[in-house]
Length: 104
Image 1 (cartoon, rainbow, N blue to C red):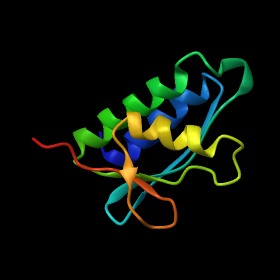
Image 2: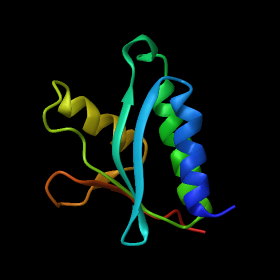
Image 3: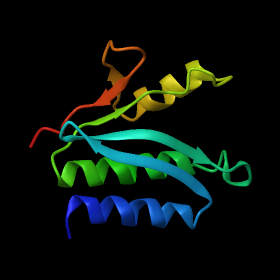
């Protein structure tokens, strides 16, 4: 199974859990454009589980993950702290955050 197929499966898997995800390959890395856990499923650890699942996918293919927390969110600081706890750091480009390749 290739990366494109795994991305499709990843999105479909979480769609069944009432999560909307937009994930693509850009410049040889993964780009998370949207992750939205629907209200009834929030605050149950689902977002953390999804992001750890995504990290495993990225590691299998030796890809960095890039994302940009929603600047219009009421909890932008909380989002940045959430992603930092998961190993993301500011890339210095318009609020973008990056999870670097895991050292082998």
